Length: 109
Image (cartoon, rainbow, N blue to C red):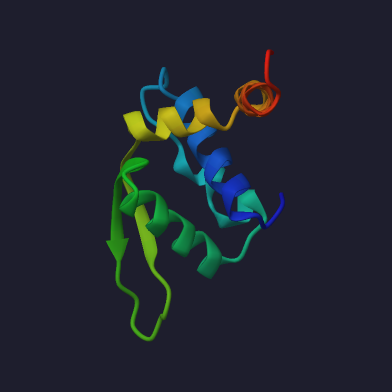
């Protein structure tokens, strides 16, 4: 997986959305190892997602001497904002936004 933060966020959100029918969401499928990123980057990305209200159901775990956040999944879920983020970042939504902007630039279109 790329180390691009947006790709990591999208991968986690898509997994949560796809897992909504499961009785219990296995968050280990989107941990730092599964995503191929460092543990510090993972903790910071999760922190961003929680602060931006994209996900719920994770609790911070304090580790002595650790300078980055760690989280334990208690009952991970995607929020409405997380679902909207997925919708806005679909390839078709991006193409539509580009076409709409081009239309605004060209008079009579």
